[in-house]
Amino acid sequence: MKSWLLLILSLATLAFARPAQADELRPGYVELTQQDAQHWRLVWKAPVLGGLATRARPYFPAFCTQSPPVARLENAALVAESVLTCRKDLAGSTVGIAGMDGAFTDALLRIAPLGRPVQAARLTPHNAMVEVASVPDSWEVARSYFVLGVEHILAGYDHLLFVIALVLLLTRTWTVIKAATAFTVAHTLTLAGTTLGLIGLPQAPVEALIALSIIFLAVEIVKQDPAHPRLSERIPWVVAFGFGLIHGFGFAGALREIGLPEGDVPVALLTFNLGVETGQLIIIALCLAGIALLRRLKPAGLRPATLAASYAIGITASFWFIERMLG
Image (cartoon, rainbow, N blue to C red; front, top):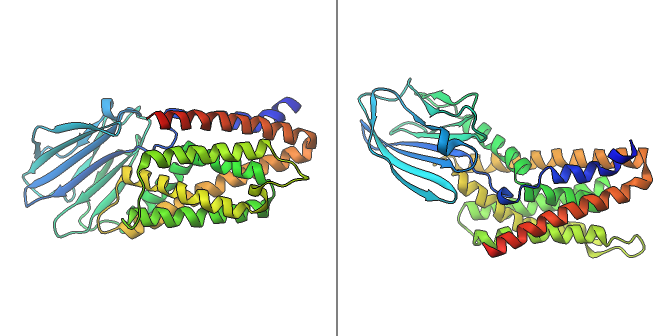
């Protein structure tokens, strides 16, 4: 029992170490925008990783014909644009993505008809088709972007490792909550500001700084000395707020990859951020529970386990930093 208790945190962090996709939320994306009574602009975005680019294609009714797609490679995704000519209205028909079985990513569908509200849906390998609604469900955008927010914090490994490192550094529930609140407020500000076009930073240096923030926390954990608290321990909410501003730009980059539904930007932005916070709270709760369990069953093992996890986090983040600096 002692062995697995000592290694539980380090193994958990190593399970998330996938450097090449550290902060990339890359779902597929299908957009249908009506041009006139018969013509729809079709945009199909399929990430190279995850299986969509090679396995899947947009699905539309048989009464529609598709022009030859114009394709390009953009940010590790295949983007193809074409025009659908449909003999009748799409309302009541089925659209979606064919061939999602076996893919390892989800997709977003956005349908923008003339004179009717935009319809949005989240497609999965188990639910890859939807019916075009005459009156779209106003809550569908909120549900879809909330789930995407949760998925991003759980699958956006650099943000995830930052939160884990923050918990390992502070360990005490209320201290963690205060620091996490400061982190939340900060990244909400930059996420909203960037998404609404008020502020912005190039994505490449942002991603490098995010990796550097994780390295900083890992070093702070390793150098902890109860007799001489470090800056990150004395004012953790200030440190968390500063790094939260940087991570907010990262969240905004992910949201740009997904796209925001026209006319529903405030709802999508709010629910995406709520999803991020929900995922973050899940991770904090799990980490605190693991620390509490280890502290109760084997108090002497807490520091070795924390150090092992910190070295794993620091090594992973260092690799990301070098990779991102080299481009």
